[in-house]
Image (tube, rainbow, N blue to C red; front, side):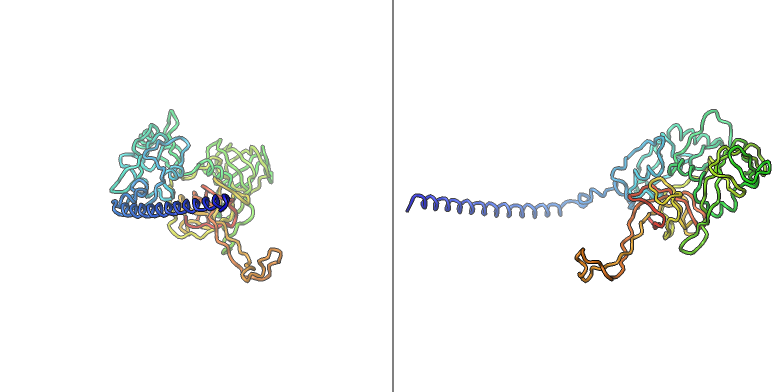
Length: 414
C-alpha cells in the first residue's frame, strides 16, 4: 500500500471516531437537558401558588376591585405645582378613568376630593382593597381647609365657590383635572357655539352715535352681561353657519368666528363696552364671551355610564388636531355624557375593493377589476376627556393621540 493511501485511510478513520464522539456527546447533553427541564417543571409544580402569581400581587392589582395599577405607581407622591388630576391618574392607573375606584376620601380632611400642591398621596389598604388617599396635607391644602371652614372663597381650580371675603394673600388653588388654561382659552373664544349659548348668551344690541357696525375704538351696547363690573373683558364672537348632525340632521350649534374684544365701561342692561381691538366689524347679534371664562372643573375622570356611539363634528376650527386640543362631539347629556367622562377616539376604517380573491389580479401589472367591498377595521388613535356637556353635543379635550384626529372620527367607550 502506498504511503499516500495509508495516510488517507488513517485520516478517514480518525474523522469517523471524532464524529462518533460528537454524536455521543450531543445525545448525552440532550438527555441531560430534558431531565433538567422535567425536574424544573416538577419543582415549580410543588411551589406555593403565590410564587407563580408574584407579578399579580396586591401591589400591581387593586385587590377585590381588580383595577390594574401601573407597575411603576409610587407608594407615596408629593403633588407639585402644575400637576393635573389626569396626570396623577395616569401615574397610578393603566386606565386613568378608573380613578373613582382608586381614590379614597379621607374623612379627616375637610375637602378630601380637592388636591393641592404639597399634599402627600399614599397608597393604603382599605378593607382589603388598594386605595390612594391624602396621607398628609401640605401648607396650601391646610390653608384651603381653613378658609373653607371660615366661609371664604377657594380660588378657581375645581369650581368651588363660597362667600367672598377680603384676603391679604392669594388663596390656594386646587389642581385641576386637565390643563385649565386650555379650556379657558377655548371657552373664551369658542369656534363652535351650542344652540343653548346662542339663545341665552350676552349679545350686541346696538352702537353709540348711530353706528350700524363697530370696530376698534367704538362703543357698543350689549345685553345679558348681568352685573359685570367695569373693567371686565369680553370677546366678541360672530355666529356663523349652522352645524348639523349628519346622522339625523339635528341642529347642534353654530360655527363661531372671533371678531375682537372689549372692556365694560358702564354697567347696566344694556351695558356699554369699548372695543379695544377688532379683526372683523362687529354686528348686532354678535355674542359676547367673558375672556376670563370660568367653568366648573370639579369633576374626576370616569367611564361613561352608557354605551357611546358618537363622532367628531368640529376640531378646534381646523381639519386635524392632536393632544390638548378641543373637539366637539355630536352627543351630549341626553346620551349619558357628562364632564369627566373619558372616551376613546377611533379612525374610521376605509372601505376597499378586494379584487385579488381569485388570484387573477395578483400580478401588480394587472389592473384590478371587480371584487367585493371590504371594510378595514377602525383603528384606535387616542383618548379624550369631556369637560362640558350640553343636551345634544359636548366639548372634549384630547388627552393623548397616536395619530392625527379628524372630523368624522368615531367616539366610543374607552
